Length: 264
Ligand code: PGA
Image 1 (tube, helix red, strand yellow):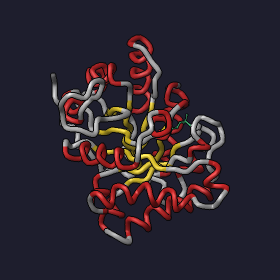
Image 2 (cartoon, helix red, strand yellow; image 1 turned 180 degrees about the horizontal axis):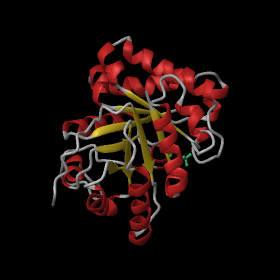
Image 3 (cartoon, helix red, strand yellow; image 1 turned 30 degrees about the vertical axis):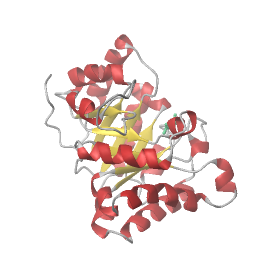
Image 4 (cartoon, protein in one colour; image 1 turned 30 degrees about the horizontal axis):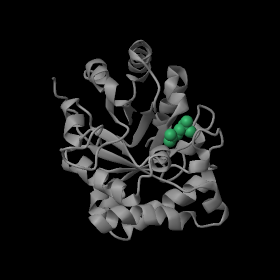
């Protein structure tokens, strides 16, 4: 297996992550990745990451290893190794050249009852093995309407901070994903995103200023070519986590180029 020498956390100002979710097959992936490579090769200030289902990680490694695109998985086991049927460890992801892993996506947290503590263990495992965790946080519509979104997101961050220390965010990514915006076509407004991103940055800064500076904070939830430029231009938004539009090379490329245009 060829090992990538890609550095886990890049120093490019922006990061755009494709979350393919449970989509794709060998043939479609090959075409999509070919288009990604062609359309994204000119990016200089934006790191693109593709997170695919586990069976396709070898395909990503094979196709992307000599490109400027990094890759990762959509989940990881909270344990190091052992009798955990169906789980995939962080070390196994590294064997396939992964440098990133999505952790705590709300689609998993709700459907598979993932607790904040479980998510925190996965975060630690990822970092222990040199993967950059992309920690998803966000509130439900009910919680937003009740005005408790910062409490909710704060608690999600505390689960990590309490297990370790805010310093761990220096080599991590947080993706703010309001649950009501994921896959609904209804993105957060730039104002809503701005206020939550500032809350997240300030929370980390109050504990560890260096980590707050290095931390990338993405926005995820119905990002599309029409709203990408406006969202990426918002202060404290360092890129996006893209679901549906990442399955279309044209749309995904337009979003990545919008991130590039807003990167300073
Ligand atoms: P979406 O998904 O872009 O399809 O809304 C975003 C996400 O899963 O975070």
